[in-house]
Image 1: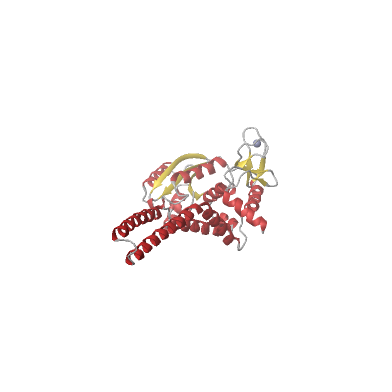
Image 2: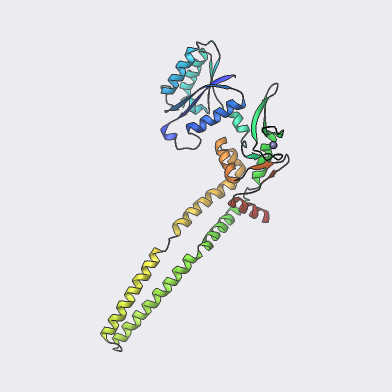
Length: 326
Ligand SMILES: [Zn+2]
């Protein structure tokens, strides 16, 4: 394939979902073309549902393809088949029509999947950021991560990716450790907000004191040990102090909602990291790259044998610590 038209599509209801935006699709396809030396003849950006092929941008692209009258083979690339059509019958018919005018339409994600770490790796020789690309063998493409601008470091993508799977497996939470992990994080959270609890206790104690003063004044008044004016004065003072204390109590931040959302997040985290490798491999490459970025805030360095990491995000350092001690 020497050249191709790119077709990206999103419908309004898909807009918000990750990996579906037009720029994300476009970036992936452009990278595929760059890796494989494919000339991009045009990009068609559709904001329309895939029920039928009666879509404004598709019509434009189709008209363009027909102008060629089948003289030269043409290609149309999209990221996934559901970008082309959501109806198998329609898709099949359209593929037939395109074939008649010497056009091949195909979904292209493969090479992307083979270089998921592109841009996340540091060169062990010169510290530069590694890129990745395919080089054409006699029958196949071979994929490499390699350094740029003069530095010769390169390594087979397959080996780098395999070693990376070993690397993230280190963060797999062992069975039963999830609950411990949750307990540790929650405990840490609660102890860093302990002063709220202390203040609440202090106010409760003061409220109790005021109520005792009021009750003893009432008893004394009934036993005629104090007169009515004294009792009324004490009652007024106590009531004012009590109102102030109640206000302070309601103004204290309520942590129970916060704790519930932290517990929710912890549940998600534990579920993911109880099988991190499988979770990662089930995602498409864009989500996978987001996961890699969240695990390693700094670039990774693969020295040919293993990964060296300077800095880990905090939850992962904790998982590592717990795993090592068990
Ligand atoms: Zn280098």
